[in-house]
Every structure is written in structure tokens, then in C-alpha cells.
Image (cartoon, rainbow, N blue to C red; front, side, top):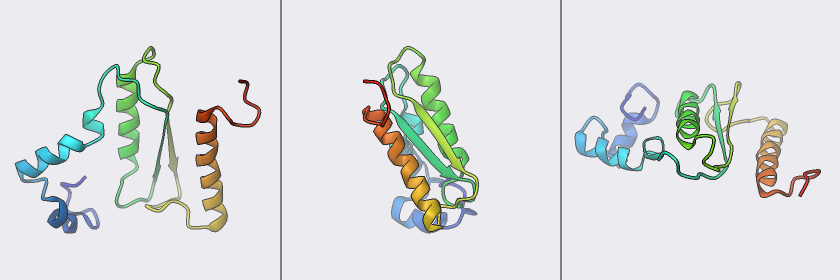
Length: 125
């Protein structure tokens, strides 16, 4: 998406990061791009990938594609943690703007974290 100048704020960031339409900057960006550096058979930690349907900066398909790449490359026998994807169908770039919805989203994040740490209430040890 950094190549698409029609996305808000993208072309302005080229001054800071370099224009990905130029090969040297494109190659540099690809060198640290998480999706393009996923390795097959590597044990990755549990991940909760989130996005918002109405996010003009990080389109909803970006975390979806990253989740698909992780799931495909880790395989069933890798011992990696789960890769969970949650797309908020009413949120933008900064998630929920409503105070109560924000707290609900935050509780979901904490529930995932506590579950992965094995200290969620009611979980067998």
C-alpha cells in the first residue's frame, strides 16, 4: 500500500521513508516487511491481529493477508501459537472511539493475553 499515492498520508510519508516506486527504497522496505519475512516451519508466538474495516491507512486485508501467510507457513505440526484475526466492522484506524466500546475492545485484548499466558480464569492447568 505504500506504493499507492491515493491512500491518505502515503505520499507524504515517502519523504521520511523513501518512495517505494524507486527500486532501492522498495528493496529496503521489503527487507523489513513482516509478511515477506515469514519463514516456513518457524515457531511463531501466539498472535492477535486486528484491523478496522474503515481504516484508510491500514486496509483490512493487510492483517488478513498476514494471518493467511503465517497460518500457511507454520503448518499444523510447527508448535506455533494460534494466529487469531479480528476485524472490527465499524472501526477506523484508531479502533473504537466510543468509551465503552474501547473498553470492550481492550478487555478482548487482555483476555487473549491472559489466555495465552495460561492465567485466564477457569482454565485448567
